[in-house]
Image (cartoon, rainbow, N blue to C red):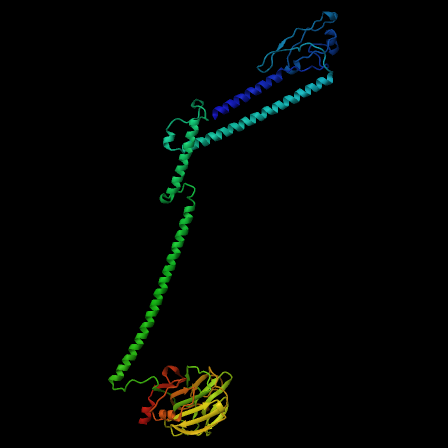
Length: 493
C-alpha cells in the first residue's frame, strides 16, 4: 500500500511539472501599444522594422532585461537598421529553451482578437492551476487514508497469535512484495479467522475467569446482581415463612398448653370432689340460675336462636322468693318489632299471665309458697288453643290466644326479666326473684302424660328446640349458675 501511494504521488508531481512547462513555453502576442525597451516610440519601432507588423515578444512573460537591439541614432537612415538576431530566452522552470521571437508569418487578427486569445489562455491556466490544487488535496487525503490503514493493519498484526507474529517480518516495505499477492491474502484471512476464534473462546471462558475485557462482559454484573437479588428475595421469603410457622406453632402450643391446664384443673377438681365423698357425676342439665334480689340488671340469656314456631310447649322448675308479692317474669321472648312475642308474667297482685304477640290469657297458677314447682305452658296457633300445667296437673286451658299467629324466629330469650325492647329496657318491678331450672322448649304440644312424667321425675325429657344445657345459658349482672339436681333437691327440701 505504501508503494502504491509513492507511485501515485510521483505520477501527480510529474503531471504538474509537465503542465507548468507547457504553460511557460506558450508565446504571448505583444500588444502594439507596448514599446521595445531602449526605443523611442512605437511608430519609430515600426518604421525601423521596414513597415512590418508588430513583433511578438516574450519579454513581458519572462521579464528579460536589456535592449532587444541597438538604438537608431539620429541622422542615420532607416534602411541601416536591421532587426536584432533572435536571442534564446530560458524559462524560469527547467524546460526546453525557446526562441525569443516567434516565427514570422502573416498577421493574424487585430488587437481585439489577440486580447481575447490572451484572456482565454489565462482562464485555461487558472483552470489547470485549480486542477493541480485539487489533485494535491486528493493526494494528501489519500496519504492520510494510507497512514490510517497502515495503523489499523499494525494493530491487527499486534493482535495476531504469537506464532503468526514471529513467522516473518511485517510487510511494510516495498521489498516485501506486492500487497495483493495470493499468499499475503491467505495469510491475512488466516489471521482474521484466528482473531475471531480467539474472541469467541474468550467470550466462552469469560464467566469462569471473570475477564471483563470482551464485549459481553458489561452484561455479567447486571445478570449476577439480578440473580443475587432473586436468591435474596427467595431466602427472605423462606425466613419469613419459617418465622410465621414458628409463631403459629408457638401460639398453637400456648393454646394447647392452656387447654391442657384447664382440663387438668377440671380433673383435679373432680378428683378432689371424689376424695371428699361427693356425689356421682352431674349431667350438663344439672344446674340452676339464681336471682337473689329484685333489680333490672340480673338475668340469664339463652344463646340459641329460636326458629319459627306454630306450636310450642315450655316447661321449667321455678322457686319464687318474692315474699308474697308479684312473682315477676320467669321468662320473656322478644323479636324485632315485637317485644312481647312470648311472656310469662305475674305483676303485683294480678294472676299469672301468658302474653303471645301482646295477646293476654290469665293462668290459674300460684308460686307464692316459696317451694319448687313444675310449670308447663302449651300453645298452638290453630284457634289459639292453650293449656297450663302445675306439678303435672292441668290447671287451665283456653282458646283464641293469638290465633293463627306464628311465633317469629331469631329473637332473644331472657330468663328473669321482661323486655320492653329487643334484649333490653328491663323493669325492676317486673323482675323475677328466685331460682330457675330445667327450662326446655318443644315445637309441639306435649301430652298430659309426658308433662306428668317430668313433674314426678319419672320421665325426664329434653326440649327438641331448646334443651337446658350449661353451655347455652349465660348469666349477667350478678345472677349465678350453680350445680343443682332439681329432683334430688326437691326431695331433700
